Length: 125
Image (cartoon, rainbow, N blue to C red):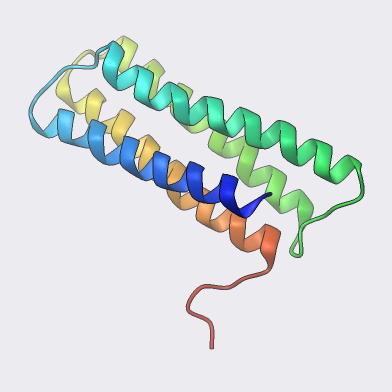
């Protein structure tokens, strides 16, 4: 996992999540805009998965548990489509908030993935 890729993904997921939560706060039902913003988050996660598979197959590994890392990335890949699925079924502002929260959830999961991959513990003495 490259640091610049992690930072790009984390900041975009945070921005996307906050943006879509803002749309939900202003009572906007789910739209192509809210779904599209989160679809980019999903696309970045797919690229990260592909890059990580290549890195691991060439001998790199996480400083933490590599299996746990892949567990996080696979779980993060499920979150946005699940939120969009909810939005398709229930077209209310609440589903827009769920889509936004999925972006924020992915941002938090990316921070944890970076901790596992790099061995860095934030806030540790």
